[in-house]
Length: 556
Image (cartoon, rainbow, N blue to C red; front, side, top):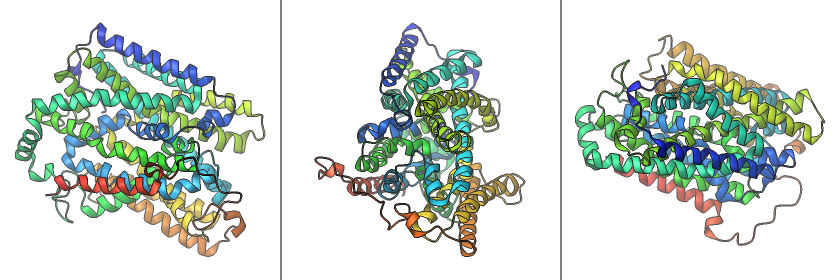
């Protein structure tokens, strides 16, 4: 059961609630301000493709830094130890760099409004509709996790009733997205990024001081859980046992390649931020700029999980006691005074709203453009689709409230999210990567590769793993294996189907396959484009090198 223990009730006072109130007021103000710039559907869905790279870059990382990640990765830190850094330095940075350097020219250059729309151009209606439905389902599932988890946190921390928490949080997300569309979501995410850091940095600093610094954490947890618990790679040899239940091969292939690239390169909740940039250069730099703060996020997410485990040794040990998901709230309860506590609660609230808003804004775009406008109501006035998108936002929030309860069977919410990614994002990545680099890939291959990859991942998880046919030590290990299965099955099916079906004519693939160019004139570079920080290649390789260097202190 996904819950927070009743003993986590926080001693909040009027100052803390004042800080919360100010935050809510600012968020609504952003929504009303952004509404004035929404005149067309392009404004609503992609901010008119007008935003600078630093705005879209911060929104890109904030959209991922939802409270499911904050609570989930802190839970992973408490449950799996330093192994959790793999989700960042090998499970995020290389894929973000690949998105910026390789895939954004295809996305942005083709002028598509969504990831599924790219599949429409490359493979045709069948793959487009299937990917749209899959993405819409996964979006409301993930948005629901954010909303339900938020309600449970507020009930445990502040004493709010579950329905009050759901209505309050859902109303504010609904209000600023419905008012200002993607612009409202992005500018709010930039604000939320700094609010989240303002909450997590004091929590980490005070926590480290309480437990005797990094040496204190290392001595305590190494003595209690073994030396491997405080390293990134020790104990990951094939056949070796470790808390994560995965070896180096499944970490590198399952997490570092298949699951990571599947999520970061095809998840429209992230890619949408880059598509709203003002030109191709800014779109490419969006995930690269986001990669640099992403490298440092483990310091304020994973380390608090370790601190919580030192302070509460029973964390996750007893079914009716404190669970791993309680790591961050435990520190908030035990370490923060009023005022700072209000900032921390506001930061947690901001994180939930950022994660939910990212999924709801991408859901309304995909449903309106790729399902409603493409197959249900074609050729209507632009104002009709903007109005439809606002109603779809309402429906998305309401459906998210219902689907969230599926997560109640997971004691670690990150396990649940990674399961969804292995089902939905990895098969999509297979179709994209093969279709982008192999000109002969046929429309039929795209459809069957996506469908069989999704089914293959589900069969591995629900049948082979859950039924005990194959012994996999943990849910996370099962997710890594499911990702590999999805990738292999989807790839094999695409190759086989391509050999027996007809490809699209070469002239229809311009700008959609690597090595081909989009028709029309090339985009003019922006003024000052020769500056080093405007060069995507330098930013990308710099992020990869920095992420690799971060492994050194945890590898020996």
